[in-house]
Image (cartoon, rainbow, N blue to C red):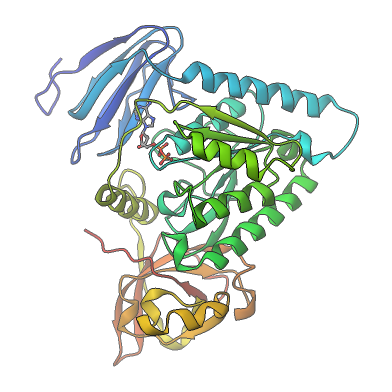
Length: 427
Ligand code: ADP
């Protein structure tokens, strides 16, 4: 049948254990529905018959274990079917985690943290880390568990906007279009998309989040037994490697999955962790379906991610535009970063990585994405989670007013806003 756009609805038949890999057109969405059989997108099963709309640029695979027929309506940028997938090896990991989870649930000895599955996924950028994390979480949720997703990937954050270190509990499968649930997520604002801007702050936030999750696990046996899946940055050498080891230790990981052909990384990890008991290292193939995303494209994705925060996944929300007097808000930055100092002064400031400094409100805040902190006092900023984000749209020096957008009409929990280097220019 021809659609309103004049193109045909296409039917695609997928044989068992195969997938169709799709990149949606950069400017127009794609509609898709399941006609027959069971299919999943990164572990999340699609409902039968219902047309789902995927936003421009989205990259995903529709996979079937037993064979299925789907229909596509719209133009795709790329489209390819493949029977060569690492899905069986990924499902095997899930099955072994399930054995572990059931063993903990039925065990009478209480509270041995090393027994809960705590998976950390490491590897190069574009090795499919976030994707595998999604699958493991979705499959666990489908089997009735409530795993915690920990997102340390500040460059391409999955829970909320870039520059955040966050965790959320997965109760239902992750929505293939709208992504991870934001309600009851624990979110810390790092404020930069690269950790080099402040390595100490990155570590401090990771440690803080790890402690907060221990508190959650102490209260909830269900979360505790379900364990966690941790997604990391694609930076695996030098300081990036140090950060990985730091995260493995702080979250007490029981399984490190290395994605892709990374013999050196696997050897290094084996060496670094040889005295740490109860941690296993597993090297798995990356999928040939993973899309390569160049640095420009990553930037576009980051912008889209921020846009999604303010305007919804399918551009279906209108952000609130509000104004505030300069005196109504206080803006702070943590430590010092390239933008806030001259190059020559760079080295001398290292000791102040965690220092909280008040920032004067001015035009330099234009297009900045600021976090709304729960901190009541500036010295609580690093240890506090954030309530959400605003983007500064106008700074009127004469009237001493700022205009900003926010996805929520709610009052701020405090007047403290946190600034980093993250900016967003609406296009
Ligand atoms: P990483 O987290 O390692 O940077 P991602 O998991 O984000 O990598 O994958 C990179 C991109 O490739 C994402 O857009 C993801 O949706 C896409 N992708 C991953 N696996 C597949 C697949 N099998 N088929 C199609 N697209 C995929």
